[in-house]
Length: 509
Image 1 (cartoon, rainbow, N blue to C red):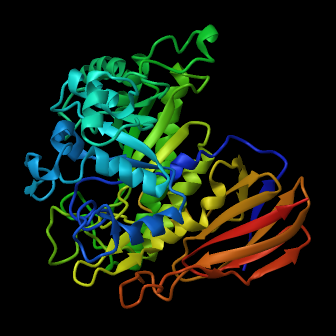
Image 2: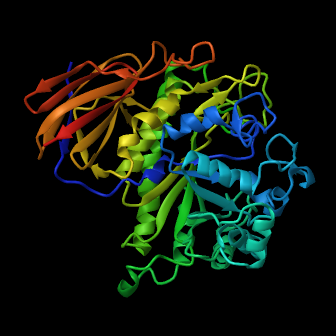
Image 3: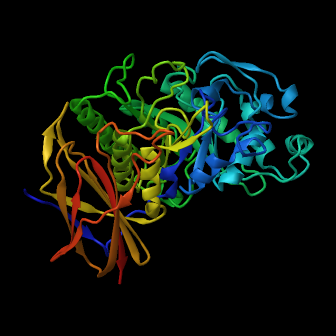
């Protein structure tokens, strides 16, 4: 069998891979917040101020860099004042987007910021443009971050928090083209400028403002937003942050069917396996096309691209509330994640953040909690995040693949090997994905420019394509040592099992 070669120049680092592309997303949706992150102080589940400690422990192992909250579509119905003060006095609301259930607002601003502190992560708050006001958003950032005796700082202290928080990331709306207002981009571009102006920097808290961007391939949305920035074409401004917002977002989900029937999470054919991975690889195309539009207006790359919703979206598990978006997570989801990360790494010069949708119990979750037993399950996707922590804030390395087998796809040939690499100090990390459902693949790592003095590997695979973890089999899909690494005259030779993801860690002289 012909081998695939991956040529990597270890001495030619490229753009820095921001750790923030490994960001997460927690929406008031199904059991993501209630029963996922938050169980209340009276729960039998071990908790600290109502926050599940096993969830915190599992996520701290991923070094999650940021957490987006409270939505999603929920954000544009959320009024932050409803979620502060004594919990038994907080007004209720209807969560009309997700299950039409009543929300009691017992998890609000203080609880979320407490969660971020327990996780050791940075807050990415999504502001309400759809049904909120400029004043409401302005007062929220003041409440969160101002240190003196301003009205909102005094209100925060009255609610039990003396010191301000750091809030580095703030979203200006969400999906303004849909659930966030059904706006045309020309309308939203003006609102984004207005709202961003009032999300002020208080007490040394510099806010990175992210305007709600395009869905999928809507390049017109990106173009109009890029036209709304100030002075991107002036060389004398190139060292200053873009304004009045600093980034735009992009949303893209992987599914194998139409919106009304997205495909099953665990019952799928081999053809659906390949279709899902082909559609996951489409992320690279989207980043290229949106990046080209951004480059025309911003060649200095002052504006960031934030993929703050991505992942698989399958039909809900049978017997669960269709508005709660609970789905299982298989080896296929893990490889969808690894392919996305390869794309994010390759576009590190523009992609500054990404947020998997979502962290617990919703869509492509890292963790699933069993409402009956309270058990916590790490999903296959969780393990890809954990295996990739070595890429956080490392410098990207180009990977030139040769001899890659392909398979006829829906729109084009699907390469059956995906890869990316990075270096930091005296180390490098190579990520390799074998998308072939049935055949193993040998990859020669042609390592140039620096001497490799030691290596090790880990691999994630399973007997079946749809293998997944459950409370009864929590490690059905879990990483193990990759033994099939051998010296080669060009560097190393790695044999990847069928349908697998692997990382190879290198020590460099």
